[in-house]
Image (cartoon, rainbow, N blue to C red):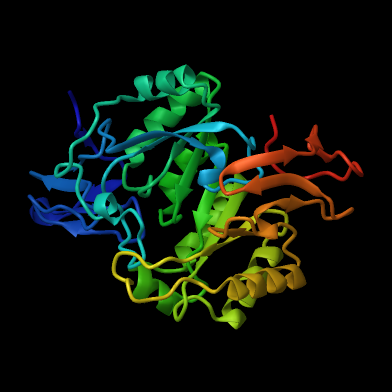
Length: 338
């Protein structure tokens, strides 16, 4: 059973060193060295991925869990993830698998063809590459997405968007939806909190939009880190100015986790202030995540103000959209509905 394949996107350097070109880390690896993503290793001057067909998490989830609000609401997503991640977020909720290598954890052998078949067998309309970041298991994601697309299954990624343009351009034609984690709008915070940078994520949003991938954006508001309202306003303004006004923006509530155990949960009032700012700046569909029963769990028509998708947690309570239009006033609601 193969769990190692020659990686895509790398170059040979001197003395059998290689440079990985998959993500903005652009790691240079000596023979025998594994990248910080824990999924790519230099063996005798060849870069391999050890994250192929070996998922450590396989679940059937509501699409709302991704979260995707305007993408086949009420449907199921066949969700897979290998171990490993190309970021190191201090707040990671899945750190047990994201900060481990596929070589270290038990896994299920599940090649791309079987992923697609299991999605069909479980009544799933989409496959979600999620939990850790699909950039870390890029080759597995790409091959699975190609097969799924050919079999009429939609593909969605849940990602930090920390990937170089060339591999993203290859993957994007096979994607139907994405939730991109825009972790902050400050490069210093990205480096401090996530071990990454902001600009590559903004580039990812533009590339996915260019390819017509349905996009939703999540911004986790962490007290003391990403709860600056001026920064949130700048983020919303950038999104509107770059054509994302109609893409749902999920403000998600933080709960203590991983390396931030002493940071308190986000006050609901902070999330509500972010919603207020988003609306002021022209975001059409701001949402609140991780606050059960809040008004802004649901989607409202921007013309008549009535509830067009009701939600309670990951459960859809009502859908008042027909052929992409509000049932009450006929106003178009952007999303993927079929």
